[in-house]
Image (tube, rainbow, N blue to C red):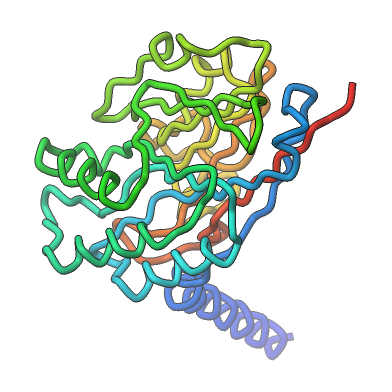
Length: 283
């Protein structure tokens, strides 16, 4: 009996050590692709099979170095998406950890190298808005790397034809100035609307107008412990922290993101790029 107890304790200890080792050394640098199909009658046939790669929260700096960032970019490039959308937080606390000019140039070159025939878009994250210098830096990087920054505004997504859906970018709830009415003012509910916001708790307001919302910010908890992590009090992701939610007639999908912050570890919250495929649904 005593031997069984000792054996059980040893096994538990080894399991804990294995989990900690994996969470610290493997999980943060293992980038997965999560595939999601968005099917709706309002998605026009001309956009059938159009793919959208959504990535967020790279947090270049403290833990994400240029080698890691290159791996992230390669995952996106290997998908050959039609559209690429970045959900914010490019650098990790850039107001405090000021990126060097060589790092900035490398980031621009890597982002610019991503090909997306139907467009590359981005929204602000809270780290991007820590001070005016950081904000201007991010604006400059997006401009030089051919990403269109969407701040409370909309764009039409076409695919070699007149049919389209709307893409709406909403400013971050943290340090930003989200304005739902302004963001959706040039859209109409007869057309499918995909919206993007760094902070998922904007969902209740966005659901009035939007059909689908992409968000990030929470890192899926980063260290996610079932039940316990649901009580995490993350500003901007207090209500919606991880996974997919149905809110009124809108779907919210919260990505785990790619990078890490505060501590370089992940558990049950894989670093990910989300690849969405649009599908026209017959009535």
